[in-house]
Length: 536
Image (cartoon, rainbow, N blue to C red; front, top):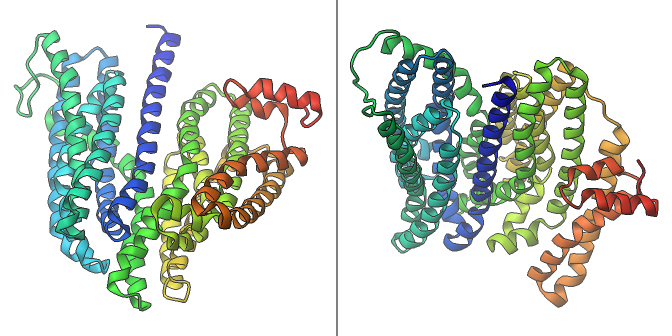
């Protein structure tokens, strides 16, 4: 295979996985909206407690091992040693099975003290119900790594989407079905959806795996396969762990940031006098509602981050420092063009948005305070993509952990005051600010940034402020006659139009900015240039 063909295959595989990841992220971001409306804020809060512990353990148990098995298998395939790839897979399957069993047992063992520490004992069943999912997800990660090692990205991508579809469906169905038994049971049923999704994903992966083994005329490689020449199982296992450990630590950086809320916010709210019956509800305002809405615009930069990694890596490998600097600068400018108006819109319409989506207008208190995190979360994602492309995945992981430490201190200081849940939201803003600022400094140090401050920050900020004030005034004017829901929808639709017009009036756009919009971008740019609203 030629270098060009190999590179094209790699980029095609990266695109397939990126597309699957985007679909999965979108499903993961949106399902909390109907779920919160169906079961209520208290159940959503209990569900969030369980899920925050689960996602950390999943990252530790599977993320690094998944990458390690695909890398080590690919290395041995490149050397033409087909038998060695199966030894790697057997070792990985054993390690991941043990990791899943160990993390599941640990979750059950620690469930009671963890929910007691969080001052939310009703979350106990929701935490325990996640233990089986850790076992199945770990086995699923081994088979995903197997296909990725052969550069067959279709099965892992499809299984990722299928898992999320079954998981979301199970969350909604089981949460509603078990609600008559009580809120704790409804939350447990919802968290058990992770097991159902993982079983569906694993079953899907087994079909092409068994077919490939049958075509190859071999038996399925078991854990206790026959001895063969070459590396022994302990040697392979040690190699897998050495590759997996740094990846796993990087993978849990963001979940640890979110885990800070679970470990500290309910405890500090209880200390501030919030009654136990209200704790899970306010916790849901922050983590299940406000953070869900903030994550919606971040879907854009999640896709940008994914596409930046191979683009930056290729340019950096070829020594094209100027091109890498241009890509990093352009990506950061595009991020701010989207993030700043998203922040302004969420702040201006926080209460009606939460009322429309979740039926909980009180959650607007948390969303308004958390809306600033939109900018820093999106900048953090974009700059992480640049740093990962430069081969410095350790930097964004470390910066997120530092941000998590800052957030924990702020939670302890702010939540115990009259700010309450607002203090928790502002703490998240501070944590993401630290991570985003540190990432940006790292990118500037490694490759440099060519940013026009007026076009990148000042003009978009002024246009976003104008948009925020306009939609807030428009909502206040329309709500009495049309009702809150219709007024909110109309202002959400009007916001981007107002922002775009304000940005054009400020001469904040150039024709080249429209080239990134597929299909209609260039024709619109030509039309605007003829009217004098933009320049080259």
